[in-house]
Image (cartoon, rainbow, N blue to C red; front, top):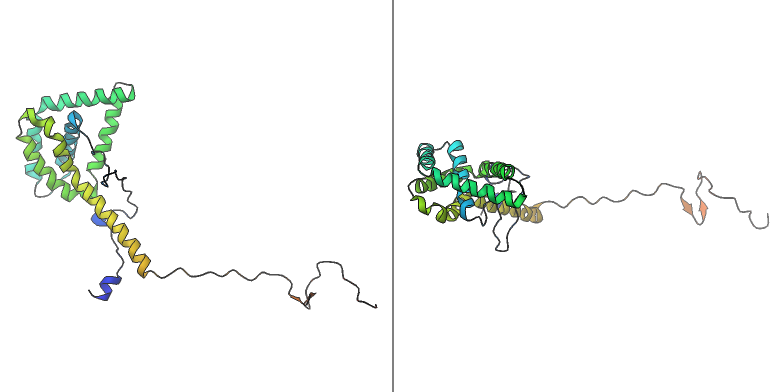
Length: 218
């Protein structure tokens, strides 16, 4: 490997992410914990639908036409399940928050929209969303909720991959700095300012700081 390649400091985070990107915590299994981790049942389908909605709105690659078509077919074909799962989520959130569930539903929806719209992971997310939208749009309605956790986990994977890539970038930067970065300069403390003392007597020109002591025999 050329020396210049070894000595070049990692410069850009993956996906042109911010240098101040904050990563989520990891679970006991070592995987990053996201808004979609461990979600099951009706809520898994509801969150999956939000993710596909974000993709249908924001993805503009080669998959745009087929993705939008599949998403519209999901809305048309699986409308009853979409309504029933959202109602279930509202009830669940209402029970947890001791209210009617609407406000916490809205907050969670906003959180999920922002999560699925993270720019550094969009390219891989859009490709994955198109794959899943094709499957869900043609799936028997009775299987939607049962298979939703699997599809949600697959839709979430591009973001986990991004987090892992960013964590590696951070580790590489730390390793490079430890090996190649010059040590910080050692700053010595300035010499104290005051009268110079020689054999117990102040040097010429120094100001006395106490009463003079008479010489012996004076």
